[in-house]
Image (cartoon, rainbow over all chains, first blue to last red; front, side, top):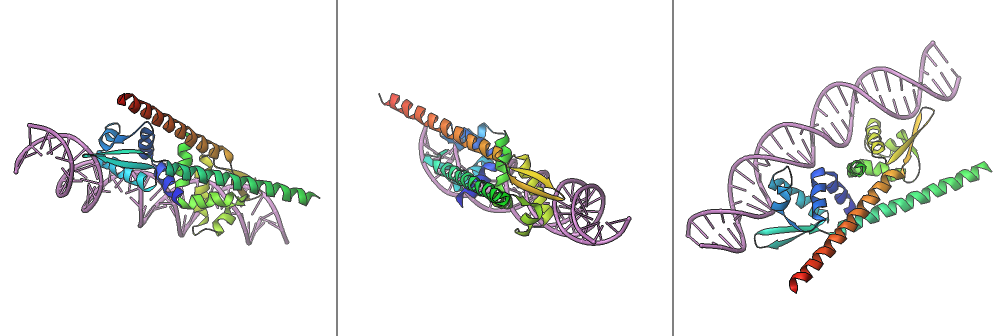
Length: 104
Length: 104
DNA sequence: GGCTGCGGTAAGCGCTAGCTTACGGTAAGC
DNA sequence: GCTTACCGTAAGCTAGCGCTTACCGCAGCC
């Protein structure tokens, strides 16, 4: 059920911006906050949510805290959509076959 | 930017349940509401959000309103994550090459 | 040691999302 | 026509989310 956390995490626009910025490479909290219209603590809270969703990782360097993209959350999301797509297609196929059976 | 609507749409647990139920095949609003702990108008509102996100379609039959999965929204989401993944990989590769250059 | 810059956390606040009830509108059956 | 079942929308309420300010801890530097 971890894909649920990832979905709610990426639902917020600010969090999406943070995530998409991190895609370009690791960033410190301050660096991220400077490019955003919100305060640094707000960014900190967003990063916590993203981390809990398995979408980002953190690495301490001195007093700085560098965040980067974690592929695990992305993989879970991709798998979720893929499975969804497969089952939806299967159901569609079943329905089509049933309708064909009714016509006879 | 339609993937944003799809993400916020799928962030809500009730809406996810509705969407996953629809994966099994078309359902009327009443049928969906019966299997959920919320009222029928609530389901109606959720369906409106899902429709705006391009995730579901509706088809009127008499006084009933049948909803089914629309693949368009799913495709947009898949493309978004795919592009994200590609760019993240490219950035990672660039960073690795830069580090290699610094070592020399 | 003191100072500075870094960042996580707590407390509090406003606003929006999701829910409910109440209503109106339409199609089918008598 | 009347009634019934279906559904969408409006209005209103509440819980929670995202934000801010204030505070604290920690690492580096003088």
